[in-house]
Structures are given as C-alpha cells and as structure tokens.
Length: 370
Ligand SMILES: [Ca+2]
Image (cartoon, rainbow, N blue to C red):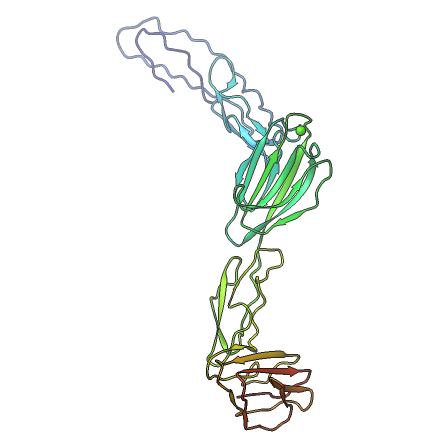
C-alpha cells in the first residue's frame, strides 16, 4: 500500500480491507527514532436504502465497495446510478442515493414498458405538456393497458396517437376519473400526449404496453388469368394486378395493406370477370376460363364500338348448365339468351352497343365463351 523512509511524516493512510501488514527493515549503520503510528478500525459506510420505485444492487459497504441503483419501469433515475464507499476518517458514500421519478415524457423502443404520468403515484403538476414516443420496428403495434387513470375531467387529458405528435391521427382521448379499457395502436410508432391546465391536479395514469406483431394481409393469389405484382403483403405495402391478354380486370388494379387489428386490403381483391370493352376487336371469356366458372356469378360486359360500326360475335365454345346458368346478350330491343350445352356459331349485331350478361345461379358445370 505504501513504503516510507526519511523524516517526513506520511499522510493519513486508509486500508482497503480489514487486514493490514506492516514490515520494518533497518540496515547495519545509522539508527534513528523510528516511528510511532496509531490506527483506528473504521466502520463500513451506512447501508444505502433503495430509492422508492427502484432497487439497490450490491450489499458490501466497506471502503471501495460500489453499489448501484435501478429504477422500476416507467421511472427515471435522477442522480448517480453508482455510489462508492469513500476512504477517510468518516465513512460516507461519494454521492447520495439517487431518486426514481416518473418524468414528463420520454422515448421508448422496448417491446414492453410502462408509461407513468409525471410524479406518479403522486399528483401530476399544473401546466404540463408531456409527450411519450414509442418507436418499434415496422410491422409491430402496441397494446396499451391502463392500470390507473385519474385526471381532472376535460381540462387535463391524455391523447393516444398513431404516428407522431405532428402528423399522427388521434386514436382516443381520455380524461376524468374512469380507467379506460385497453386499446391497440396498429402502427410501429405511437405517441402519448398529456396536458394539464393551471389547477386541480390528480394522480394521473399508470399504463403498461406490450408490442405485438401486426398480421400480414391475406395472400391475393391465386389470381386467375392474371399476375400479382408485389410479394410483400405486410402493413403499408401495395400489390398490383395485371390480366393476361383477353381478360379484363374489374375492381382496383392495386391494393394497399391497411393498418388495423384485423389486417386487410383497402379494396376487395379484384374479381376477374366482366368489364367495359371499347376496343374494335377482342376476346371475352367466362370467369376462370379455361377452368369451370365459379358458382354465384353475375358478370356484365359492355362492348362499345364507334358509331357506324356493328359488332360481330363469334362463339368458339359455349357450355353452361341448362336453364340455371345463362348468358344474355342485349342489343337495343333484341335479347339473345343462351343456356344450353351447345355452341352457337354466328350472331351479327347491327348496333354499336352490346351488353352481355352472364349469370350463374348455382351448380354450374362448365361455361366457356370464346
Ligand atoms: Ca387541471
């Protein structure tokens, strides 16, 4: 620990353990008065009590020992997280025991945590505007549960927003003495905003949140007679649809996977059936062709060519269930109805506007129109 010689009185020494070894050495010549020292056994530092809403780590309190402190979830440590028992004539820690305090606002990236109103479990202060931001990886939302809730009605409130404070949308706003039921935020970023006015403070809130993985939207495949562009069906992603030649897309050509607890696309998956056709020549198939058409279909095609033209329809295949599944063709005052097992070859229309109506009541067998 120390080696001394000469005539200078050494400074006060403190041992770092409860054992001390002294050795004295003198050579063959020149003697002196030697030394006189006194020693005192020093106590440990006083036991540091854990802070309210926190824990102490470490249970040795002699000189040089270090203990640390952690706060419960939702509380922030104020002061020094580590304190050391100091050498010296009086045993003391180098810093006071820190405090664990629920603060006004914060930023969280944990998959589960606690959000407390400032000062909880005591009353919050007046005139606060606190923002807590929970940021998780894309594809996760949070489930919020209220363990305590009490604010001055109307004037003091908590707002939960999906997204940021500036651009997010308000999921709900809570105020008053009722503990709200749990709620879901369905985005990876959730903001909680608390406001208190100048008077009437209450204990506020104790909220726990848990991350959950957002489901993907349903697989839009198989998309018959067409292709699906895009393979990511997770939240916020878009897929689009293209038909093979001869098929007309009904419905929206692109869908976006919506945020939400039960995940779904923003539009129905487009049916491949019917449509408005204006090209001078084309092909019309029954839905699902060349496979059997599905049950319960009501498909309508409108074929429109420029004024002065007629429309020539050539069936190269026609098979439906008799009577119950049928194709109707309207052409001004004329109606042509087909519901047989036979192919009808040629039909010449004289008007420039033809409407085809294909109806499947139930139990269709095979229906194909070329
Ligand atoms: Ca108030």
